Length: 313
Image (cartoon, rainbow, N blue to C red; front, side, top):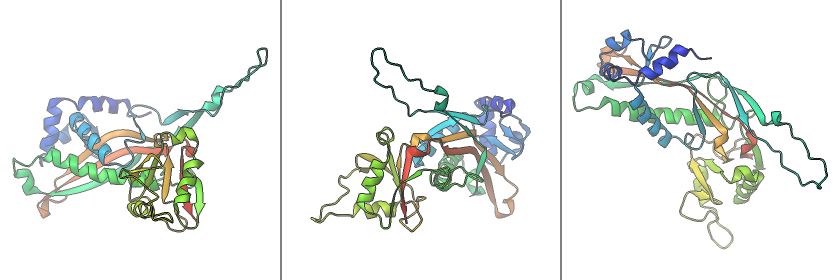
């Protein structure tokens, strides 16, 4: 279980005085914030971004991420590291009026997954002169800057993560998506094969994921009559939306350039809100100020067959 005192600190960061102290610290006056224990992580010296700003940050992070609004996101500041997912492949059966009714074991519905606490971090440097300008909005700057930085870092981990120093990515060979089709050279027929390799229950909420180069290649494929195979002006393929992430690999040997499935079965487990520390002295000789920002989270695909990929031989 996570330390219960940390949860109490999270809620106290909604206080107006904490918010004022936090943003004064971001302008290069961190002493009062360092003296506070509210919202502080002793191990890193970081403080929780105030709740109002954290909400703005999360909204922008979701908008910029290829994953966050199609995955399932859980804030688990005070829960255990064990997660239980429920699903079943059972079906009811037609039986004669006096026939025996089959019994299903409900315990097989539950899969237990152990989550860990992975660290995603970034340091941003800024000219000190900006902070002396009363017209410079440091809150807007940090929210915009960090949401871009962390959206990229999260997407890279959720796609290619090794499960040790980062999340388990959807392309992890053992804990990621299942291979739905293999090919020597990517064709539109392979796209169709991947689509129908997925169970209908996952297809109905399915999303495609690929990089720009792969999407452009598929967009340019034509039939023998010169008609584009990927038709329509919207970003949909076989009626399902397409997400572009350039952390997806290209169509190279041994790679999986296209994924398709129900990404709600990918769970993002947020262990702490965004934490920030002012590095006022570290860059003082450069007349700059630094900000160390940290996310503590994990990610994993709880049902592997919910997402499938095309693999290039």
